[in-house]
Length: 330
Figure 1 (cartoon, rainbow, N blue to C red):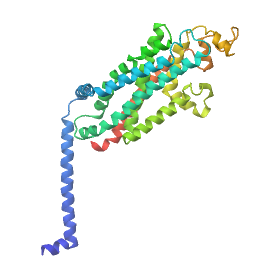
Figure 2: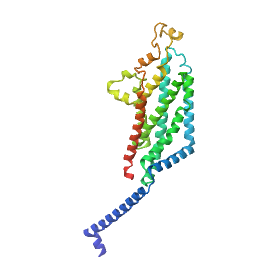
Figure 3: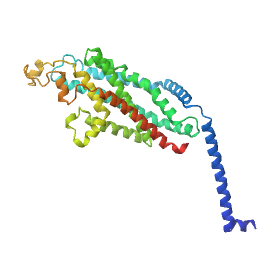
Figure 4: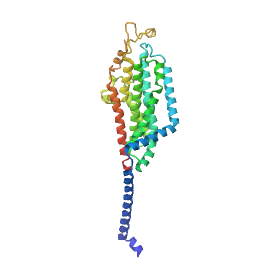
């Protein structure tokens, strides 16, 4: 009788309804447990404090990455200083392009190094984040802030620690204000590029895709920045790319800082022997003539606000992307 009932249509439907009800009860229990876990979580500030402490401990344990970044930064600055050694002191006409090349290289190196290091580490940690977030241990915003804030101070230190080596070996300037502004610009490009790296890591579905997106971001942002192609020669349909590129504004700041108060640029004997100039006719009379040649205004104070706004926007987009990707893990 039992077998006949089970094999009948009515018995089969009844069995399915019981299984469905059991599944619903199980799902409700899991949902209730998650809600209870969320309800018992500590405040957001307390979560942030604990997560920050955990990140700092993790940074201290992971000394290899810090040492590698320190060595890399020192080696790069020594290399740049040795290649462009002394070109900034009493520059002649032909040295102008080399000095601009040194500024461009330092900008690229600063942005590339910190972006790649971030996209190579942050996506790997998201697996642990999803497990802990789905358990209701902490929220998205405290986690994101703890990651970005814990890395911010160290990145700033690494970004400017060895900059004096390259600055004084090249001989960009002997003015303390120019030197201080140079360090501030390097710190700003570090902040903006790491912000973009967090955004890309949160948007990308995997570590490999994040790496490719980071390379594309850097490539598209560098081309219209003002050194590879002059700013006034960028096609009209790429004006939006030029103005939205953080490297455009950083290069403007570096150029203004270097050339605005530089003074006269001499026509050396080497320049005259190459037919590059004569004592009475020089391509660049002074530093401001260099800025005019590159179509850069001598005053770009708005660049600081624009770059800061870009960095904050990248962080906001990163938080939103992380929340959207993990909305099903609540």
